[in-house]
Image (cartoon, rainbow, N blue to C red):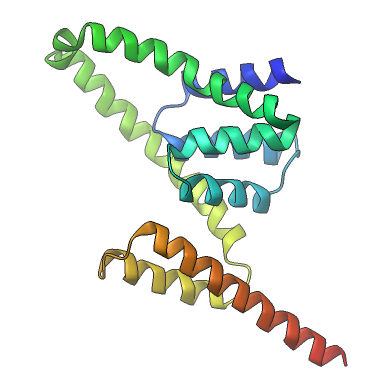
Length: 183
């Protein structure tokens, strides 16, 4: 199991361009759609936690997912699998940075890669939106978070705390409402 996790996350790290969100899209395809080892909601939870913790989003997600699948060593296998190839590439790039920096071919290829990754990220986002907005108040909360973040410059950490509190309040309200209707 550890070797399988390491190799899968090694592939993510080697062949998924565009950062954390495109890797989440690949995780959704493999672990939610194909292997069915987690649900959309679980992936959303893992992603939310990974995004809200200090450090890199995808490193946090890899550790969290790996731990869920195979304990602490599973987390390490996923995290190290994720960083192995990028670390080797970064070592090479930093060693030859001045040559890469001014190379028109490298710059053009990277622009093409960024363009190709956008639909993958958008696809993952659309799937996560369906999982995140199960109750009508979620749309209002999301709109409020958007306003707080983009117009009032509230920190992402504070938004996560506010979101958690509002999520608990909404679930409590729906729970009481269903309990009252059943009584």
